[in-house]
Length: 347
Image (cartoon, rainbow, N blue to C red):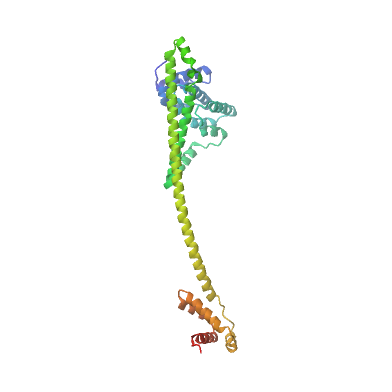
């Protein structure tokens, strides 16, 4: 197997076609150099973007073969293809015909059934085929908008958002680790007879290597589970802090609301008193004289009520001026007589 070289990989990708032999040969070469997985996937993605649309499906098939054959050996290619595959699917599906889309859907089904990317397939992969994905410029615009919105958060909401993002990242790692662990620890490897068979076949060293790799996968999965638990605890803590904060704000708001209700009742009462004084319409000319001549029995009671209303007001003098301004001369005389009767000592 030739040594890794980015230029060599580029040349191999330029010669890639849809034939099984072409895909398998290059896939084996990539898996052999899995320690350079990051550079391999970067080169794959760059050449995929440059390739004509009729050759891009071969790149996807190559990626699938690399994923299927490398995930039992380690998470390198799973992690790297997880980052670029959604965008690659989006580019390919934009100009793909129904036949190509059907092939991609079959591939997605295989990845989901075999949990190639863990328990969660990147949503953008399926969305690109269902026609819900938007163009790259719109994605960038929306991503920037999302970042601005997240940056605008403060206090408990910012803590919840940060904790939730950390948990999503931990869950993605957990899903990939679970997939790798499932493939690296087959049931027959743990059978009691495995050591006997390996000993008889002279393959104890090979079995030891397999068990070491299985142990590494188990440890990686265990570590990812612990990280997920930690992030879940952080999220729960952030939610509880937010709940306490909201409960305090609820009590504070409830107190303010009660105060505003009391203040509104006082204002309404004062308004009703003022309207009672202001709302007395001027009587027709001559009605005052008739009332004075009649000397009705309710005149003193009316004056008593006006005096009581004035006493309840903060500025009775101003209210009195406003109330008397609409009275005729005869009505003023009648009102003065009533007040004089109230002021006179009882005999």
